[in-house]
Image (cartoon, rainbow, N blue to C red):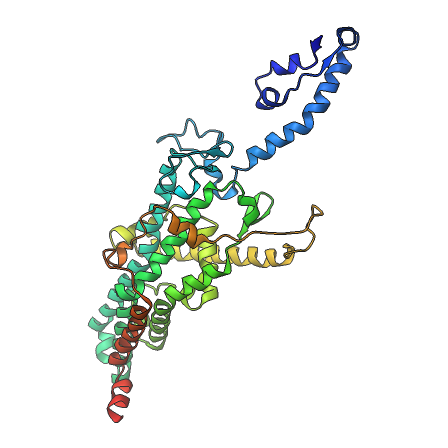
Length: 400
């Protein structure tokens, strides 16, 4: 008796090695009809190779495409080899950054953790701090207006408006106001970094043409992020309004930092989704590096950065409108004929389970996390600082 799959089993392909099943047939039949026998063996193998293909796709999340296993050309990349994800879900026990995936079949490995740390540090050291640093640079630019001839010639009410605008920078840049918010943003970034480990990533996203258009984040995440950023958002809105009300503040050489994402819960969640969830492995721009590390950047670099942000917002808005038109809702029948049932990921929980350093350097990371009562005090601090800066507030207080 001769195996019908001897020839295929000599192949080095994983599918042949794993799934070439010996179909024992009488030797006369094999000798008389070898071609038919080979076709019979392939007929059995073809459905099984589909399982291997499906297994291989489990570690090919488009959000981390640059780190897929066996990415063409990356083995000889100048400047060092990029650490790759697992080729297929594999059980590991030495994961330190995302320990919640130890003992489970995941796409992360001990070597790949190096890449996770690098890209998380970009958010912690460059991308997020650069926003506060640009606010600080703008504050100095607004203060410099006080040394101009325009300020000297301005009316008293215009000077008071400028002074109020300068005072409104204080709560925005104060650690007690921005600290907890940006620590929560870091937790979000950590959770998305650990999302690379999931082998069931496709259950949490909406794709089109091989691209992820949306990561389905649990609604509780948005509510929690906003609860930690609401005080900062209020301070940011007050600053924005004061700058818009002051004609002298508009004479500052540096442009006002965009704080629109902190105006309300939906704006903040959309910004986080577009900037972090859809780009968990993004590098900081040159302007972000300069602002975060040297307090530099300016001129043409700032203009190019602002243009890039606007173009990105336009693209995201276009994709969002497109998604709203084509995306089937929960329970509806998709193009494949099956009902749509998507899971939602708790990104903050993933981040808290991780071992990434989530202390906020830009807000004196040695400070202890604030309790709910401390957040109330911070809200009153914002009000008090704004009240002291506004003369009507002091007059109304005395009137009482």
